[in-house]
Amino acid sequence: SVCTTRLKTGVGYPQLSCILECADAAHGLGGHIVSDGGCTSPGDVAKAFGAGADFVMLGGMLAGHDESGIGEIIERNGRKYKLFYGMSSKTAMDKHSGGVAEYRASEGKTVEVPYRGLVLGTAQDILGGVRSCCTYVGAGKLKELSRRTTFIRVSQQLNEVFSSTTVQV
Image (cartoon, rainbow, N blue to C red; front, side):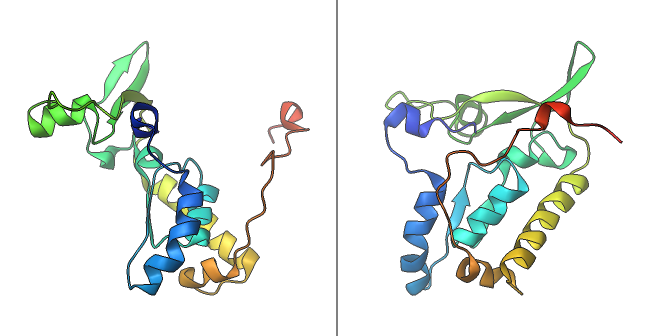
């Protein structure tokens, strides 16, 4: 993530826990939950919806694609990159607000992410992961996903016992 708010201010809440704790109250009042940050894989997107999010922001997952619209392609040592920055970063404030106000700190960073071409493949991967999640938990519609989801705390998400012996076919 390019957000440094929790680091700079000490204020924040882990995204999944936040969604789980806020969704019932927000939905009871007719509000919506936007999951903002932390998704690095289609499974993370599915978990956000499963926890009760109505919308999921995918900045880091979509950065580097042509459609991201941020910056030009940078070429260095034969590799291509695009800039990715948070909206509270110095880069964003310089570009959109005339700089960082002297009474506050930048709460984001600017990074170079690998250039990834068109977004279609990533979008299909995310949609496929969410659809598969729905079939595994028996949700016929995305809105049912949070009613069909149970979270279990684990110490290791992936079994990597054979990760070093993968054969490419």
